[in-house]
Image (cartoon, rainbow, N blue to C red; front, side, top):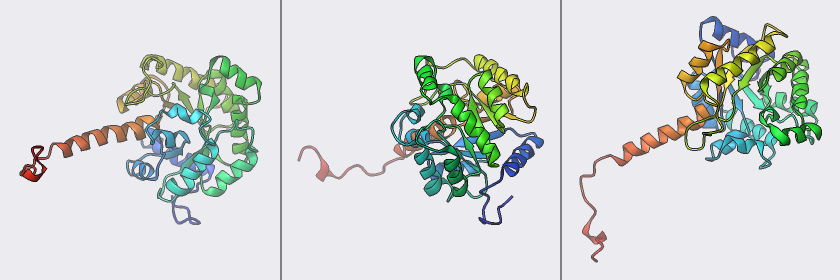
Length: 297
């Protein structure tokens, strides 16, 4: 479905993105969205057949060897980082699939209507609410809520995106957030099960079980469906690391796909580089080092 104006796929309208996703489901295939923090990740995620690419500011930290949670911290301008990754790395190399921009909707320095116009002008086909304050809890979450940096700002931004004909794929953690996002007009709701396990920097004790993730996912789906019946639901994070984990969630809930960031981009790089480097280290050497390099001289 190439766009005549760009010569490539992006940008797509909201209706066009939804048409693509529903076409995937009509073929009996799961919807797979993948985070890309670099152009080369995006290029080969597309070749692997992903349905969407999402640009998270956390992708920059992830691909620098740090935990994705760094994207929630004050280590940079989240909106500017996502825009920069999209403009200079991902959008120039992605040939056909829609690219979604992570938007930090609670940034008090931004006028969201103005920022969404820039996102749309850049050629993104939709938005995602990341960094999201929905995954923050406890006293700090209460402080954010009481000082004007609430999840409601993310919900309001989704409503604004709908008004601007921008596709939205959003994270929620609770049934209440799911209902609110459904009322705001979200197109796809992602049940966020927490920071991803596994690999070199995944969480361990902070993760729930796969069974608990499935139960949480279904309560989120039920809440959203109590408002609208046209929303697509995907799973993400926590113990959902491998394709078999994502399959378990699909089998035990009404979710129809998976969003992978660390589980696709980071884990894929970690494992492939380990194995490839080990293979190179195991190649035979016919000739030993010359004597001039002997430690006896």
